[in-house]
Image (cartoon, rainbow, N blue to C red; front, side, top):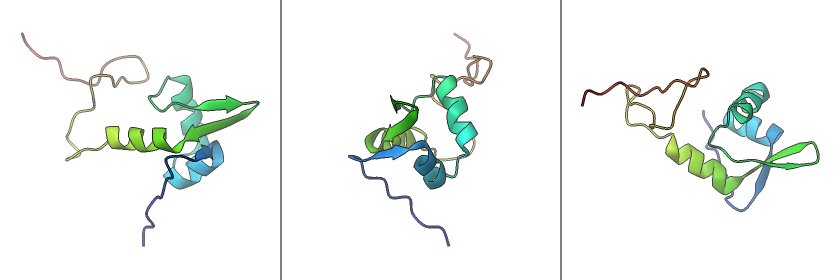
Length: 89
């Protein structure tokens, strides 16, 4: 049985905590930070922190109605190419 993810908007989550909560590997979180993902983070010394409100906003931005829904216009792949289809004018 899947357990719901409970994120407190006022709390800060370490990279380890967010990795465990989200199911994303720490290497994935690191890659997303390098590639300028839309999830803001804070650095205090060598520790990375994610604010709960930012996590919730990022999750809301990724909501889809179908697996065929296109990503937002800001989405790009690792080569900097847009995932949006080309539209004729």
